[in-house]
Length: 315
Image (cartoon, rainbow, N blue to C red; front, side):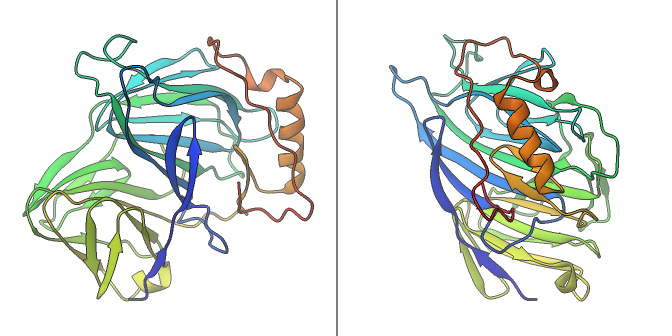
């Protein structure tokens, strides 16, 4: 199997160190997964507020927030307020087309600021975007998933965050997570030194992000915040992939069928053409009602203009 190793682009968002794996120069999305940030891990002092991301918009995508540790309050223009905690998923759908859009804020919360009594003063979180198929009319929405299919295989704990999966034992798991294209997401945690075999679907593209520790697969080492990527042509001749790791290693396994439409990214917008991104920039910066209002006093972030020669695939 041919595996590429993608290096992260390091940045800071809302006061938190970010390792960005998607978009990645010259690389297409993995199925519909078009954006992947690992925020943290970060620890906060008693006088620090943690992550603070002001009001910003999205179009033609779903934000998929997977909490590894810490707690974050989500507020959006549909009126939703939801604290997400460890091993939970939030999915916010911006809808498709120029009449749709959504805006939201994200901020760390602690026991004394709206979090649970067990809220840690730290954060480790995955923020992924899922590009929507633009040939479908999809409405904006928000869903919170406090419980997801969980099981153990040999030395690993598995959590199915989205899609369906046939385990090595032959049992089929189905996640309740809303989706508009064929895709899968699995959190894999090594509770002991050992190995795990992950089953693959034909016609899917796949990526494996290491969030803690490192893995060995196909003779290659993937370290923390690196991403293994392999394509549908590799999967055609391989029905599974084996990962070997030490106790405490954690990885996120994502896959999906490629979309039929082009996927362009700029700032917080996704579209299948440049003109629609330009219109979304103008609409947001001029306060168009399509993005609604958020019940928050956090700063409203302006959208940067497209650079000369924009071809998509960056942010």
